[in-house]
Length: 133
Image (tube, rainbow, N blue to C red; front, side, top):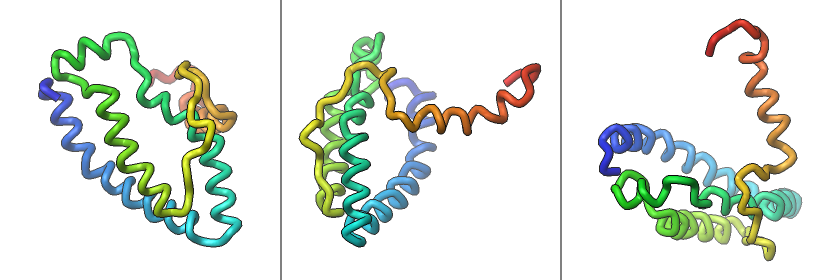
């Protein structure tokens, strides 16, 4: 990013993201190449969640201006870079994209699991209604 605070934050996050990438890649291979059952379950999860992945690259208001100013990457380039990492990793793990790769454009469409996750993550914040976060 041309905006220094964003560039600084991205540099700090890079090492953390590398850790998560390595960890998730290892589990992707273990489960995809493990047993027939683990592969079946991984592919079933991928079939459900893959159509939602495109939402990561849905344009939002102001994205074009941020891109022109050099503050934000081009979403098409970002998607190509992401696909260049994710697709080979899936193939290496014996998994594949689903035929229904096109998902909803609306970023408010989520899997059924989000409600449970949000309830767990918001439990502490909701425990004390007078707390200021």
